[in-house]
Length: 99
Image (cartoon, rainbow, N blue to C red; front, top):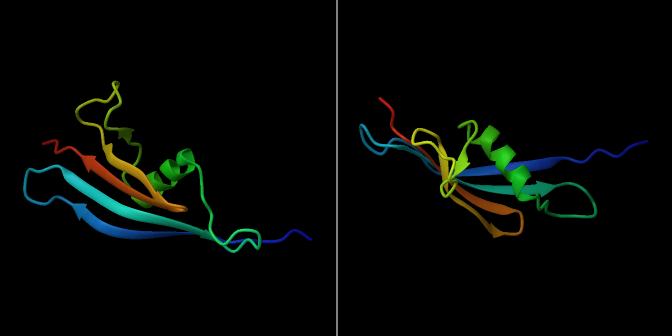
C-alpha cells in the first residue's frame, strides 16, 4: 500500500497592493515549505518549483525576472527572488501601474 505524505506551503505576507494611487502594486511574501515525509522534516524544492508555486499562491500569474532582457515594461516582474534558508524563500513581485 502506498504511503501518503502532505507537503505544506506557508505564505507570510509582508506587503500586498498599491502603496498609493497611481503607483506600481507590490506583492512581497515569505514562502516556507515543509512535508510529513518521514525522511525529511523540511522540503527544499528547486527554484523552478518555487517559481510555479509563487505564481499560484501569490495570485499574480506569470512573472519574469527583473534583469530579463526580454522583459516588457508592463509585465509583472520579480524584484526579489531569494532563498533565505533551507525551504524558505523571500519573493517580491512588482506589477507596474497601467492606466
